Image (cartoon, rainbow, N blue to C red; front, side, top):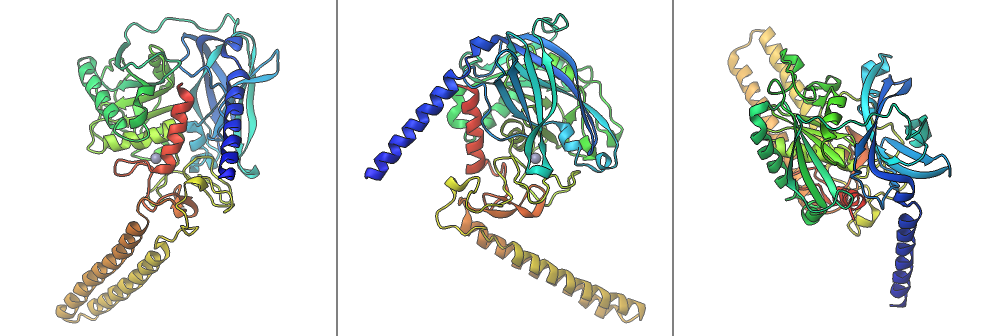
Length: 494
Ligand SMILES: [Zn+2]
């Protein structure tokens, strides 16, 4: 009991220390005006070289973020933006984020030295005096250590900072208004590939996705912390680009399938158009919804989330991609085809909250959530199933070669037919055995938190927290991802 009290006292002390630190260390009004500095920049390079250059800087009305939470104390994000006050040399704003360039770097063309340029945007509260604007990137040869990769001085009095009023063609719809943008997480849906007569459909689509979001934890119990708006700009044509089908549409933000040469990967090509459109409303996070029936989407942490709306799995895709875009959640699947090579270099702990390389079993990322007594790593039949697959493949190959022999010797078809039946039986028998193992472990560990091998595009060396493969499955993100998403919600609201 005494220990418990002591623990509580220490906990409270730490809590108030953190609270007072985060609230008094950097006061928003000392450093910023209630406006947004939008920094548009180019990121160019390949797997070996990297260049940044500023495109344009904008001054936009209102700051949507939480003025009491200016420093991102997580270690989450492929990159980090850090803004220092030049007069005091003090860090006054930071935020983790990811870029499509970061993903491009892991592809074959990037490894072959083909350079590409991507246009990107970072949002910062508008500084009152000159700041040092620093981008840090991960150094994979140094355990993912963050190192400065770009820096520049920004003077808020620079006459070249653009300050124009948002285009009157953008229509803003408010779906949920719970409070001031400073106090709430501001979600902004942006319309892509909706023509002028589809404005009503856009509103219905965003309402449908919002409903799915708020029927899922942690969003469900935190709904009052959100504002939800939509920005509509009519596209000349309906749909999005589908390069493999020779379909190209003239649309608001030029979304296209086949991003990074992956057919289902849907991203936008015109970031400036998206940001111009989004400047019509305050936002912490932007979700582009494309009026298309095809399966696809994408999500880049603290950049944007994207999904089509009319595929039967669009709602599920939206939730999955929002996990990337809003929470820096990693993909947990490890069997689907991707364009990346060694997206997670071996032996390095990923910065995402929901996967681990399990390099240090004493300090597991989600150690506080582990089911007591669960084995680490947690066996889930992976090797047994793999063994059965190998056995199956060998048996099938043997049967197939017998058939080939018989055919060459022109033996009667009765025998061939019997062997073909045997092949079907063998397939079924192995399928049943594999399924039995899968079911055994799925029921044994259902809802339990452990360390299951297979995640982040690889069956070996990376681990997820649940036996099922997240990060959005059957209406839930799972406990570990929920905790990470909740942290984001609490950071962006008050
Ligand atoms: Zn994904």
